[in-house]
Image 1 (cartoon, one colour):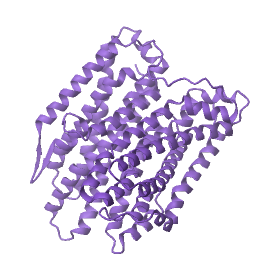
Image 2: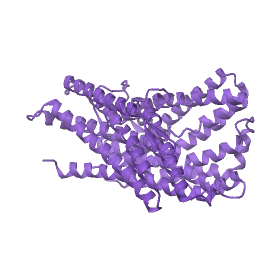
Image 3: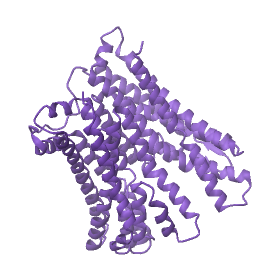
Image 4: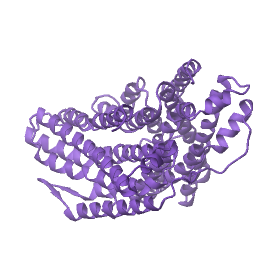
Length: 517
């Protein structure tokens, strides 16, 4: 019989997935508002067809690709890693239960999470469309087909399961698999979940399904699951962690020791730098495309756009969300504070270590983008100028995400903070900017002026970064303006900085009064 705490944890995660899966209903409402403004006299049948096509080609693929896939990977891998770290896995297998049976239980758990998410996607969008009187048949067929991609993701998670030896390593494996899937999304193999989302449906007068893509995806899921089971059967469960960072012997003493120790020995630090390097490769195709279509002007504009990466928040927010809470849960705080060290020194040391990680990761990311642009014959001085200006804006944006992660970590622990950080990353990097931009586009005045006004009260770093980039690069085919144009938008620059300070101040006040026992 499962313990009440475990049951509440499982139910909480299923409820969270159901709530996350309600976003298609929001997409329906946004599309209804947007299409009725642009096409006021459109017949209801045609409007329903447009919304269905928009949901199945844009909203759902992006929602599944950039949020649900990441959430499922991290939930499954971090949960197993946490149980392994606490010795629960060894304890369970000491009872009359085989490894295969235990692994099948994990597989069933993953399938339940995937089906819960799929059910939320199908019902939320269908009910929202039905409420407006639209035909829902095509949406039901298409959303069910797209949701099958989550089954393929479960197979990837099960393959990686034996490598998750702690909660943190499970999170890093999930993030790594997420980045790898984004990179593989550029390929042409429909059995890869991110490619499957683009290949499985054809939308004309009605929705057509490519059943071969469905069969290949399910076959891959079964093959990966069987491989994961075999790896788990052969795994030595009593060995120390497989994913350990290179050790650096530093005795934490005062702020200096905390800063160096947490920076150099943190797997989060190494993982973040590695992930930023991988994400830089995601922009290679964009730079190539802009350069081919628009020459040097397009290439310089592509450099600016590449620094507005919506993927980096998915790494930075969890980095902050795992900071304070993780240190309290594993006892690091109590050990360090038993030495002659104040709480503010620990908090500042932890913060500086993460800021250092973000700085190095951002510098690595910017360097790769600039180097590839120069390789494509971009002018040296202009490219370096843009890299320095917009690389600095990127760093400020990521600091705000880090500070928001600290705020979550100060008020909640474990997977709650982690899941909420992923949802916020999706909202602030995708949903909120798209909604504000869509609302601004329907206004009659200058788009950039209206967007600037609408964005000021919205605490979305990606949105404010978008406003600043539009001030310098309004058109792809023209050379971007001088980066000095950024200074004409002091409100947006302030919004990149002020929330960061506020989030950190609240986090410190909460941490100062937190019971560490």
